[in-house]
Amino acid sequence: MIPLVRRVTAACALSAALAACGTARVPHTARPAPSPPTAASRPPTLAPGPAGLTPVFRNGPRTPDKTVALTFDADMTADQGPRAAAGERFDNPPLVAALRALEVPATVFMTGRWAEQYPIQARSIGRDPLFEVANHSYSHHAFTDDCYGLPTVPGDRMRLDVERAYTAFRKAGVPDAMPYFRFPGGCYDQRALKALTPTGVTAVQWDVVSGDAFATDPDAVARQVLEDVRPGSVVVMHCTRSAAPVTERAVRTIVPELRARGFRFVKVSELIGAAGRRH
Image (cartoon, rainbow, N blue to C red):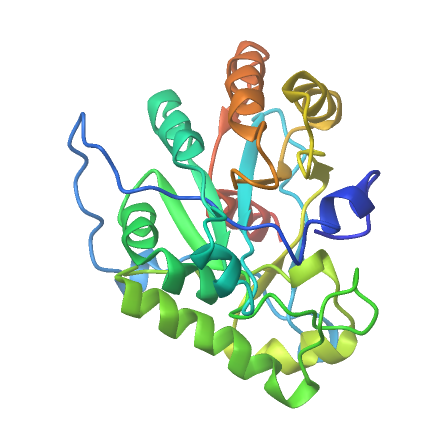
């Protein structure tokens, strides 16, 4: 969620309430468990930016190889436990099932609080080679002031918030969360980039807003994505039955249409790897 593209306010207004996706997998075709990482297979990251600041990635190379990454924010905030206990669902099993049925690789930017709420689902996603789990903070509090009404993480606790999320992933059974971080609300500044430098993460934003936040028309969401996607695009979407109820239906339209146009779906890691090779 970043105020860089149209309708970003609608997408980011979801920040405090929007939550995430996942489901325990119903096996139909066995996939091998991911191998332990080796030095040669470590996820690609970008080199630090000016003055050693955390690098920021928005899209992959605009090459004839028409790749696109669908990303899904699992942004349950730290104080939404009572709402979950009261029955609000911060997941979307049909969406995850659709991605699996369509065999669409995807990157899930998960908050640590969400992994604590749905550990079985977090583990199911994190151990499925079709997906990769990345960091969306622990608390889903903002890393800048005045970020769509989100509470703010103090500067001296930003790094801790990110590290706490990785700890929550490990406790949930996610074996290899990626060294990628998406700022809550998409809001960041130099202070935030500097605070996260020691973590070694690459900050991942996007260049296509799906408009699925609080949307009621799946066709409108699909149209917006299909109009804006370019080779190398990173699409931001959400998966929760309460705040993004039409995302699954939109995905079922988006995927076959983009494939018909010659696009290939990849995880964010592949786009970052391609970007790194071009520099």
